[in-house]
Length: 490
Image 1: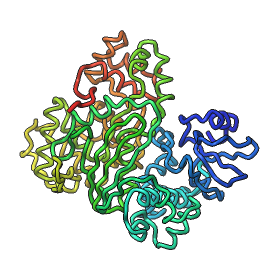
Image 2: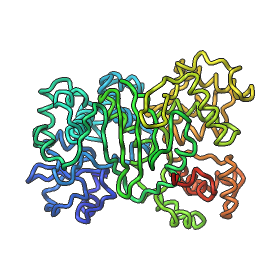
Image 3: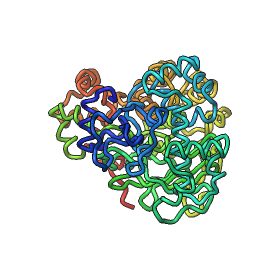
Image 4: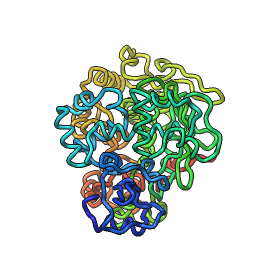
């Protein structure tokens, strides 16, 4: 969008928050960059330049505005919508792959050479993978400086910097303030004194309807791994450097996020996973605008706009849970998953809460005895087949996976039908166009609205909803009075 000068100018002059994260405005006279909704008086058009990423603005020599904090704006919805190389790379960078494995590790995960990755990112975003990762480290450092009482040396290494000197130089260059000055300017309030404990605000584009989002996560929660407590969805997180516990509560203008981490180097990755799970980088104006064009779907959108797709923090975990949930009720799926967790999951401590385990990875389930599973023999074989494929690498699921390739790999596994494939594509791979025409609840909702309700006819009609069919599914499911559609009250 940053190449459409007229459209960008209109967004800046109207201070339209819907475009925050889509592009960044740099001001030649002040050498700062802002989000489109910055509250200051808009500069003259001839003094504005537009960039597709904060990293590109920083590379061009601009520093972040102290008023609108552009580095903390919602992420671009493009990286979750698209399935091309650049989008896959951006999802992996947000997950911390460059910090942990370097550019060669990023390239290996994507199946391209480092030079190809660099060229593609520079062409579209104006910054390479190292610059994009550096911008993310700067934002992580700012969060730690402003929300914790950690010594600056600990902040530097937790944010992913190789040295304190690099940390100081980067913070000064990006924010035009030293780390100490950043801490002094932070809003007064209690800072987390316990290492690894943080309180954050996760921004999103309005509107956001939390009912089906948190309702789905709470109603399908695996005992010991997830729970709804005191108005928050809580769950354990398996992270590269350790584990964590997160509590997420919906607020009118943000998601309240309470994170407890065993290693603060996991902060950026944990935030990225929570944002993906809650679909916080979605563009509801674009989604709802297209779905409203269907006169039969429009009343559902107008009644409760801003529905998101409830996703997951771990794609492999969801694949296992999708198999456990085949042809059984929500309660039965939770029971099966709970037994698996108690038998094979790593225990964690949760003082004052009800969480007790991490969901077991495929490697922990490699020795699973099929006879110990209280389910039909065919489904046992399906589960062990999925676990084996994940463990061997024959099945690649994750933020950087090729969605079409993953679908083909899933389809090749015995016992994995179209419904399971599309559920995994929707919630684990984040495909906004995933569609489940054989789902009984979806067909029942379609019939009630006067839509075609046979799988073939419904698939043909759904072409009008592309590329947002996963969101149409949420609106149709919401017509049923199922617990997944209601925000828990206790």
